[in-house]
Length: 438
Image 1: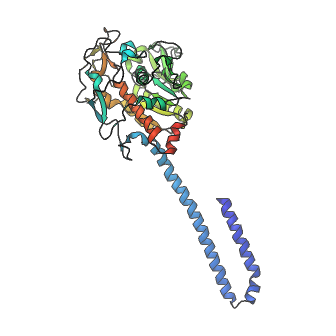
Image 2 (image 1 turned 90 degrees about the vertical axis):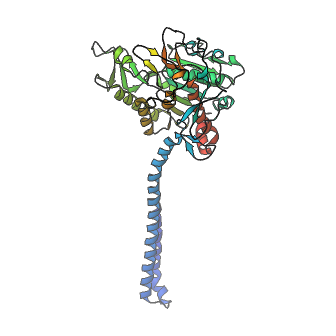
Image 3 (image 1 turned 120 degrees about the vertical axis):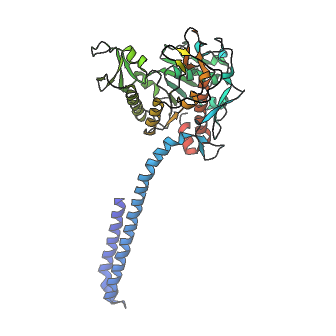
């Protein structure tokens, strides 16, 4: 801008000097008086000042507009995922605000025909006789989630890499997605675990390849997301291990080049799985024995968010964070679990959770857009959908994990709805963001 103004100024000065030098001759041949000449010069100078003022005002307006619009564009990039369009219109609805409705077209797959479902989650095969829990679909209040179209999703995911990161709830959602996708694959043998591993909870990495479509669906077990160290250098008897709250899990480099990233954490952030087994928090190489679990969880999420903002290219990777999944124990200490036959009519306060609130708050402040799958309220109704006593170990009741098919399928339908909207319905400049994964 300064270069333009300087050039403009030099051009005006040159013209003014030319007029000044030639003015005596002009006035000699002119009927105008010297007094009129001075008025003309003042008039021209006034015009020059007006022009300069206009140029400066223009650039100030552009700069001010930029400063105003940029933060709002950033804000919009995080808020565009609060809902989906209603029947293709520009209005949005919150897909997480709704109710469960009976739908006899569910379930969408048979767990006994899907080799990637853990035996412990196949409740029907484990003796559950009441199948009503399979017939519920989530209905948002003001719109419809697109019906699951397996062939459409297979094409969307062609040549992609989908990565789940988290705890056993994440693994359940991973299994659910694979089974949903397999219903659209003719050659079932073309779908396989890349290392030939069986699906178990003890393996940190599992990857299933859909060779006909050249994509993989992967799971990385990272229950805290941050680094867990067993060896303790502090010499304090009760400290057997630490969580380094300022360092993401050592396997995090494996997540970077994913096209879709789906995170969760929360189930392990409880006293019994931390302090009860001698696991405490560490920050800046300092042991934090007095730090509370909510503070530690928020600190870990801040570390995760910083890693996302630093390592993830939003032009390639779509990032999701799924909120906390409510449990429905009658008495967790005594491991009492009463699975109902129907969803609850009210959530009894379980629709909110401090871990979910922390995830929502952290995501709002991030540079890289993150879609928060706020499934806490909808899942709070589903006391009927837990594994209960219908696992591979019926002596242990389970009101934390979910039967498959079941509630995790609906979480994946929500992921599909966002990917579908990104791929099909957004303007071209927004579609390119997802298409760049090809």
